[in-house]
Length: 472
Image (cartoon, rainbow, N blue to C red; front, side):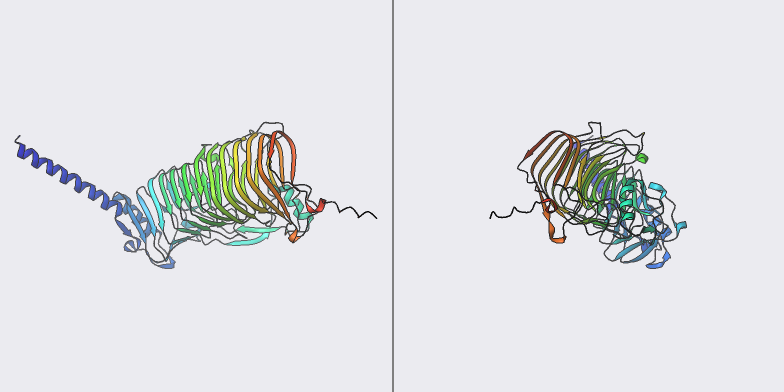
């Protein structure tokens, strides 16, 4: 072939390649406005079919942005598709229907799902808009006693606390549930008033959650976790503001996820409020947890600060909590937590459950104020917890606001091995009074290889002896 023709063909191939790349880029950035598919900005009109058409059209085109312009849009279950981004503009509100018949997908605990996605790749939910679960609750008798807090419930009953609590009114959808997805971005959007878990990520990989706001009622929002990271890998959570009834951020490995591990997780720069635990690993712990970093977060007005609760035989290893400011306050008796800054424990859910483990955990540079006793405890008779380091932990204890008192010591260590405490300080603040049940700053039972450096562990004010009288 003549050289001139070869040069011409080469230029044609280059033009075709550039044109194809541009077409692919256009598809990725193409917008599919839901109002063009019949969605109505009217909270009384169900726009599920129209919104789903926009999602399906974006997917069929090879990917694109499904755009929610300002307005209020009512919907039932929406099925997300690969390559699709849901973008809610500022002023856009996506309302979850209050009609149970509008939900076609179910998730954890058989709860319905509002936005659902299974086995997807490269999906996103972004924008300055709002996804509103429209949760409703009633205040009624407690009903069946929660077996995990039987002792706490009896303390409340003995103290004369009314045995009532909040119950959710069905339907109780999870606002977003993604399972087995890879390449997920959730950015800037707000998830409000969820009747169940706000965001549930199960068996997902390569996830970024950035600048997200999640809020549910702190008094009534039972089971309304903020962000649940379930058997996921390579997850980055940053700059989020989460204020929820129940756990704010919860890492778990559920039976439904097949006991797959939860690993390579980073949570940083978040502000958290929780009526239960602000950041927790467990209690569902059927698979292992490893390589977890929680740093540079502020925890306010929470029933528990940070927790590792192993009940189902999991092994937790290589976890770092660093640069945290924690404020805890006791909540109503039915919530899990004692106003305690942290609790790391190994338990058995049933007599048949395996005994798990907690190893190589560092708590570093933490300022904490609370009303409940912090605990690190292994399973009695088992070497289940070892390699614990508390470094630069400053813990302030104050009196409980509630009548059903629980706190005793500042910190209890039991059934542990290989524990290092460096610059651990306990301070007793009597501004709200002194608790008669306070006994010690640190209580130690069956701990091997305990090392203490530069620790300040004064007795509580209730145990301080009066000064000796002056000699005559």
